[in-house]
Image (cartoon, rainbow, N blue to C red; front, side):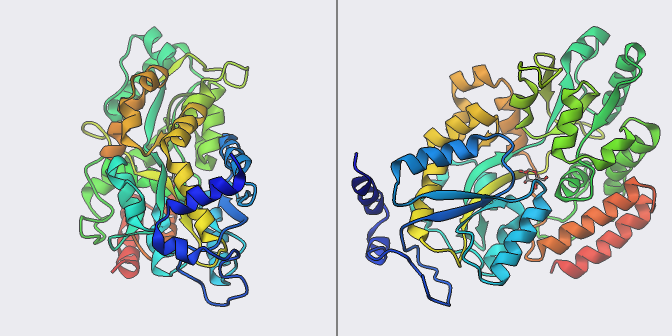
Length: 428
Ligand code: GLC
């Protein structure tokens, strides 16, 4: 099929309003004011965090092979979520057109939408009822759609099935079970670490802190968004992690772990339990020598203090920069990326959580990814992080409080009291 025909067909699918606007190419070229209209076709850039799977480039290549006049070029940002956000914010503040499509963490929607750094997307062009509801919610701000849910994320407890089986213990349901199970395993393997999550001072720490609080029956903010973090429940959650570091349940070096450092430790056989996102499933299961634990692990829901724990909702949405050129192309690329074929290929290649609900009930996929039902449950019951226009300041406050408690610089009482005051200032 000719390139031009493909482009015309794609354009036709966009509806009359966009058709009218997309006659010329180059969009807002030369114009100072950002244009909210999804117009302009041609080359676009796609700013995204470091792709640890390699599949993103594959999907982009697939698109490029069919769109000679609408090429997409990846601009790779750092691995840490905070560093990605910082670069995107800086670009938006100077109204740069360097980035067209933005791979936004689910927690940035409010900030980017309220500042008009991203444009509203036409809800009626996305079949939103086919997507997992929590993921769709993260793409909206004040009931308007500002991004498309590309992949979701739910925390899972990866555990060494071989070691638990040998010790005759079941996967833990509570934090106390986890500690007990690890002690039994350690009788035969004294050098192994029990548990790690993401405890470096960055977005991952906010995720893990929120999870600890929620898994102990507390909340960071209530249903209306009001901060409620200075409670005995929140303290019980934070204290579990503080004690974990103090008692050696969590190895000291885990204070430097982001996702990738922890993954490497789990894959090297250094941990019995690891709190991690689904992307680790494929990588830790590789039989090319890069993982020592292939075939030896499984996943379970996160443990809580008194019963089951609950995950922090993660994931990524694609949005269109208000300052980017060729927004009509950007919109089509996003539609391609969230379509069923791309999501299926992405799951197969990366084991990342899809946002299309039907893929979780697909027997073939469940055969290959037996954790899909656990993951769906993790996502459906996951708790969002605070939704705030000043999210950058909110997460920094959470990270500072949690880090100070974990490193023993402050007691958890003081850290939570100060955090409550800070959040009250930032969220209203
Ligand atoms: C994953 C999640 C994202 C989270 C980040 C923290 O990328 O999808 O929501 O903020 O990890 O490191």
